[in-house]
Length: 177
Image (cartoon, rainbow, N blue to C red):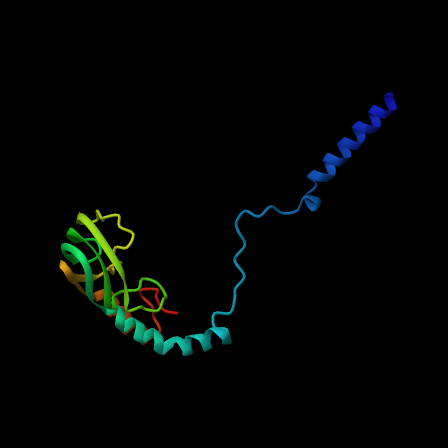
């Protein structure tokens, strides 16, 4: 019995000694390894950029201006000096037709849709309508709804800069394909 305890103690001691040995323990990295570098310009990426260049310029051009005619019930007035300084009072629920304005992400601009907004908002406090128009970061504009007809117009200076930067393949708004 005493021999078994000695063998067990000796085995435990040997296992601890081998685990603590630097050659067996391995190195513990102190910082993350650098990510594997991938090719910045693969042939497929270059081909996609060439094919998408012209559509991206056209879509960037349509992002600059919002011109919408609305049809639907409501009474409302709005004005905005950038996305963070809007003023809205009233309410409407309408179908619109025209240029949608800034896309905000890579998507095809669809020239019609449904929009609704109700209540009062001023500054960063926005109404919580899910179909509220998505205004651009640098968009200046106005809108109104008088009974069954309305309008929404705007001009976005950030999208104008994005349009001109796009000729040098720089996407400031991150909305190119």
